[in-house]
Length: 249
Image (cartoon, rainbow, N blue to C red; front, side, top):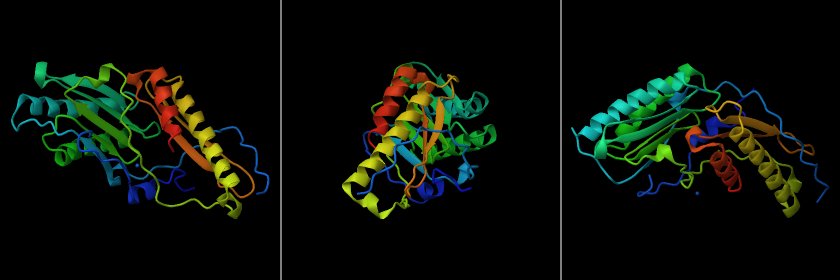
């Protein structure tokens, strides 16, 4: 079975928002309930293409902030794989204090999580040199973010990045009309809202992660979905953010 989430297609063609200051007929079948699939084994995180954001505020080479940042990144990359794939920490004092979070996708094992975050730590320093705030998302596998602002102590759900698989799904001919188009949107809304709610209400308070799939009839392909929340923003904020994102597919 291939990767149902189409990771290869996303790796081959990421589309995202890069903002300099911030870091785009016949009766149709009834929508069935969501079921959770077993996802296919993922390819190596080291081959993933990163998605980056950074601010223009900079630190100087040899500064205390730089030293604290290096210490923080090493700590996050080490702690997250041993803590259900998530870690939040800070290093330094006063204006040189730096805050950070690291998170791996919920179905990535500890070995791949460690490898992904190790690569992310090196890449974020190389690709966002001297930036006081930056975020890197290693295509579908792990997220690493740091800032001179304490974003770990309050929900931050306004920033958005969109990426999509450049390979189009195959739909029956009658899906091209307005009725078919609306049905496709209904399927996606049902699926994404369902996995968003499931992730936010997960019994594992650290690994807020859920997957699902919807299978229909009349020639429509099975559709797969995934949602994951950052545990430090809280379940209520996570649910709100996830459902908001699902409405913008």
